[in-house]
Length: 338
Image (cartoon, rainbow, N blue to C red):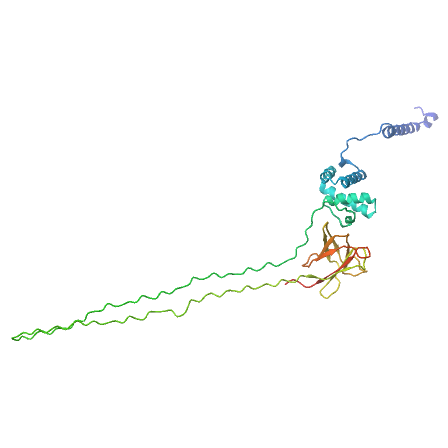
């Protein structure tokens, strides 16, 4: 057996190096051809296949088109091309809120806000960016509870009983016969006249006349049921210009007048509704909560989860100084309704 020469021992590693160099050169040429010389071009791609960034740009274009022509059916058709409208609608509202939070371009923010509200997804933070001609659903205020009147019971009249007097029975008179004595045999017979018949008059009994009229059933008077008092009552509703910015400031108190945290409140206005809780600003008070109102809108606020009165007629109007007025509302627990 012959041993390998030193030259052959020194060149065995060249083969792997050549293979790696060839693989690298081929990969580089392939990337050059696919990225620079003959790149892939996509045409007629469906909107639901877009990347997230391109998808958001497409939603922004839909919002700008809708802000220009306000043609809701066309905007809904374009939104449907991105997928299920029940999923894309909240995505539009979330994108509009992100523009509001990041203080993006106000034109884009207004367009996305109008589109989100028109699709049925109003948000409190989008109200300030809406124009006056946005078609939104009409909201009906909460009705005040009025107890229905109790029905009046009308007694059924009883038939009047008329007593008929018993007929008078007149007895038939009976004839009483008197015996006629026999004539005495004499030479000269003198007839003796017979005694006439005697009739007896019978007096009829007195007629029965009722002395008392039939008794009528008494009429039952209706009784009224008192209306139970609400659990939470509105004890204060004050408009103030000392606090600027149209703040709806709510304080919830218990029966002893102590602040109550973690109480859910519902606020409604003509463009939608929102919920907020007490206790999120402990530096003001554990029972305190506030909500930012928009100019010239009418609001209602009520405590959620309990019988509660509704604080109504809250208008975010302008004070004499030119800024929005604020409102102070206080609810107090009155106990369980009886």
